[in-house]
Length: 152
Image 1 (spheres, helix red, strand yellow):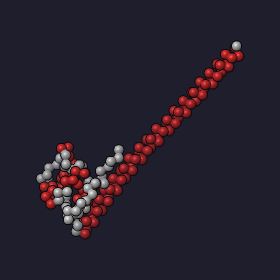
Image 2 (tube, helix red, strand yellow):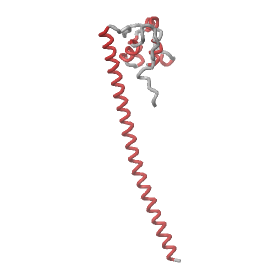
Image 3 (cartoon, helix red, strand yellow):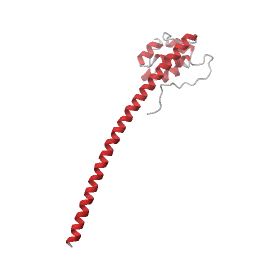
Image 4 (cartoon, rainbow, N blue to C red):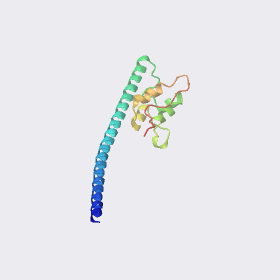
């Protein structure tokens, strides 16, 4: 009998050792996973910042091109009231940038487009590019804006 008891104790000690070793490996893997998740988060943040910079540069280039070709229908000094009178679809475009359209995005409609954009913290070039790409003949335009993201 002492042989079986000794064997059982040895087997239990071996099981405890393997359990301890497995726990150590799990902690190591968990630490690596945490580092990888942090790296992924930082990479996604950097990618979003680069995407925003690219969108801003593209919008600025688009506005510059519209100015150079004489196709710039709206400028920053246009009053919102006048903008809404000559282009009713402008409200939908501005709402996509959270400029007017709801109680939390309300702006002074007597002010200029530049004032409203500045007040809401939007990018003026992107707003101008979106407004100036609306078809002038009243045709249907896709009013989704590049800065409106549906990913979380």
